[in-house]
Length: 111
Image (tube, helix red, strand yellow):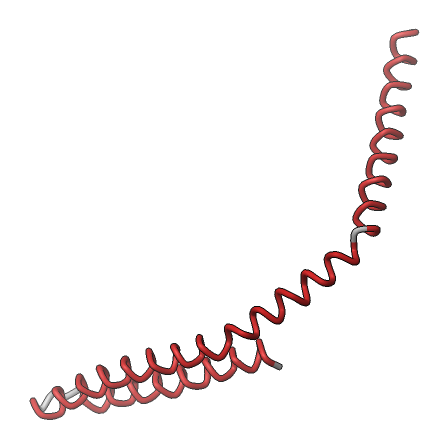
C-alpha cells in the first residue's frame, strides 16, 4: 500500500516539474522575442532582394521553353500532323500559365 502512495506522489511530482520546466522555457522564448523580430525583418529584406533576379531568370527560362515549344508546333504543322491544333493550344496555355505564375509569385513576395 505504501508503494502505491509513493508511486502516486512520484507522478504528481513529475507533473509539477514538467509544468515548471514548460513555464521556464516559454518565459525564455518570450524574453528572447526582440532578437527574433529583427532576424525576421532581415530575412524578409534579403528575400525581397532576391526576387528581381529570380523573376528575371524565370522569365528567361519561360522564353526558352516557349521557343522550344514553338519549334515543336512548327515542325508538327509543317509535317502535316493531325494533332497540331492540340499541341499548339497546350503550348500557348503553358506559356500563359508560366507568365501568370511568375507574376503571381513575384507579387506574393514583394507585396
